[in-house]
Length: 158
Image 1 (cartoon, rainbow, N blue to C red):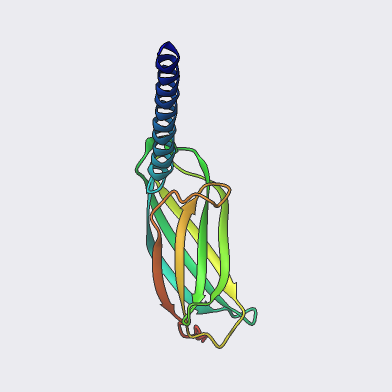
Image 2 (image 1 turned 180 degrees about the vertical axis):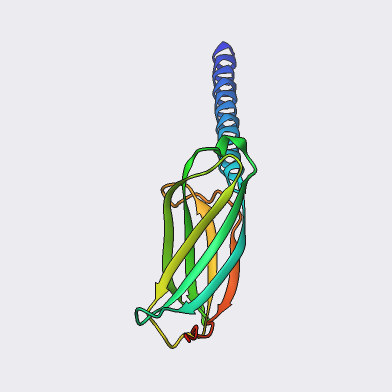
């Protein structure tokens, strides 16, 4: 009888240890997920102006976007980050990814310019998607913004 009681105590103890470790791992995973989720949206971005225009000095068109940002989390002040702009054709094909690499977030917010050249002159419109990320370009730190752009007329010269 003593043997059965000891065996039962050992089994119960092992089960409780296993249960405690499992619960602890669950809590750790939730905290990790919350810390990553907390980073997303630390910066609020919006488009100030954008254009899709023919370039006069080369056989290409240029996408140019001025993005304004404000910091939602003061811990982000003076952090070095990237801005990533993806440019898509009207059929959804990714044409180009452009990056403003390694700029410092100003405490009062600011503006970042993104531009890229598209060498397919037959395109009459493109869609853009912009997000601010960490330096590895893996973790989004801002909301994502999208916009559709139509090719503007060539500027006339007098």
